[in-house]
Length: 254
Image 1 (cartoon, rainbow, N blue to C red):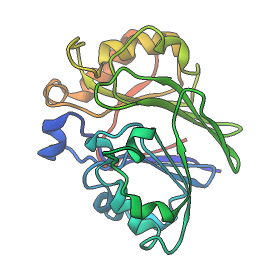
Image 2: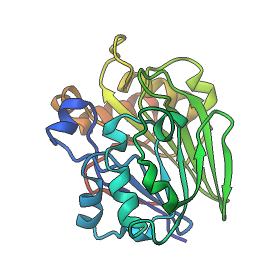
Image 3: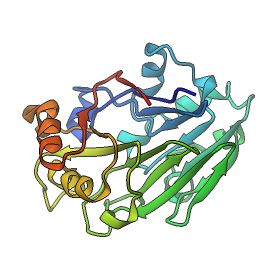
């Protein structure tokens, strides 16, 4: 079976997202025929239709964390997908602070449209039909519980590395030799005061984890000025891992 990923948006950082210098629609993953919507930021519902996809085909919704650039359209997409909760969808996976407590980003009235809501933690290992979804490590990201995730079938493994400041445990928490490893790469060089990954951090991870393909996304203004394609080539040259920069609307088949 042909698997694919559609990048509905590649924006990262408040300026790029909220000025829409790049789209912020998140990632649609089709793995073994199962449709997974990951981090539907602002405009995701519009981008889904622009890319000739149908929200009603989504099986699983995933939020890596509650920040609006990753979650602002979760309610719109779920409402559309479930036909205003009339047709229940199987699963939503998100950190507890995204769906519970005083300030959830997922509205309570929509919960009846989801058969099962699972709170992400480092012990998450969930089987859904013929795939497995795992959380690997809690990231250091201020203001939101944030978790790295993988989506695995018998033959394919996709790893998603969301926002957060690099720390050494990330080298050992994530699985090695994934088919595709997607990095939220906001900067070229580390900015110690800001909890986001840089291309230099990605290089460290790639040298250790050696996926078949690395994809950079979630770009700040700084990254756009430096040219993500150029940065990806530099990462590939130094690590030996094939690396590309995502573009809005880009589709990868694997």
